[in-house]
Length: 201
Length: 253
Image (cartoon, rainbow over all chains, first blue to last red; front, side, top):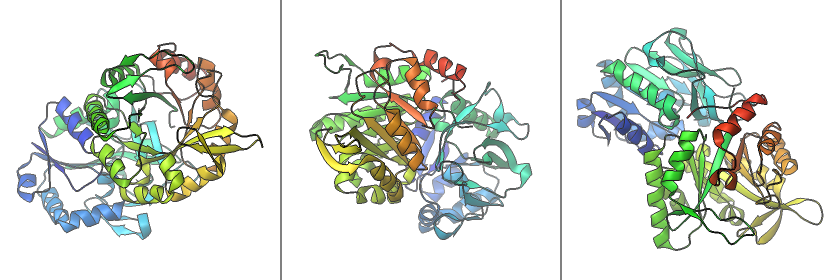
């Protein structure tokens, strides 16, 4: 069972429907016991960084996530969920994140339209099974105004080109992040979720 | 590089898609979930559903449709029509929509844009603007289904919408709508140049060239209804054509 952390972060039904298509059982939960028993955790998220951190802290889910991460459980962060893994975001005057990955989150350059909204191609930054079977021109759906900035280069799996390089997939051992929405990225998104699921099972 | 988006729009009445042609008394219907699945297979980048029903009871039928669509397709979709309050926005997002468009209610109470984007994030709040050129030559904002001229300048309203937190704009050119003579490029481009958020052109698509004309002008996406519903322009053919014109396109589902 995959635990989807349900802390009021926007449209998470679509994520559950996408996992259904892969035949994976998932559960929306905030219960530390259920999260502890899950095979993997997904941290979804849209909206503001600070609100999300406060919502996690209110229910001590930040502590739960840090413990599970330290125990080696696979955790996938999607969109804002990925950004929350980092140490700091400058959104809304600045806010500390979970600090599971080193780096910070900054606003996308105003040289391009913000938010970065729509379909963009991801390019591989290092070989790995996550990017198997995506076909030519793997377009995925992005919606975000902030992006991870100074990350450790060896954790960058794939990136997109939008006013510079935008980290799209990051991975450090059991922690994986996708800045785009795989559950909204058509067949490519389903293939990415399938690759992820196979990589952790 | 970001692909330009092709967005079919579906009007939903009593749980069915209304495929009415303007100026003609034909009403054809389809199942919205089946039509959405077809557009998804054909490579549509996003979908828009407008609720054109009125009663609360029908509203619930519409929300069921939204949830079924979310279950069926894995591309983003926007919901509009009759959105007046934060609760309305919450209910369609909760049913599985990714974005919500506000129109008349935002004109009457602009704070709705700020309150909703603060609460749900700018990325899901779309300001839909119905605009028409008036006798003085300026484009004005109209409300109540295009019946009432607010006297507001459309470009100023677009800028204000962005400042209040809208994450995207839909520009519905009322003169062009249903005419199939091309998008209202002048107005849509003026708005796209005045803001730094994505702009979707709406109204007037009739042939392949209309899409390339508008998307070559710095406009991010093109919305259309009847040319897709009646299969006058198949989406795969449209995307191949646009790609051949050098417009970045996502060419598979």
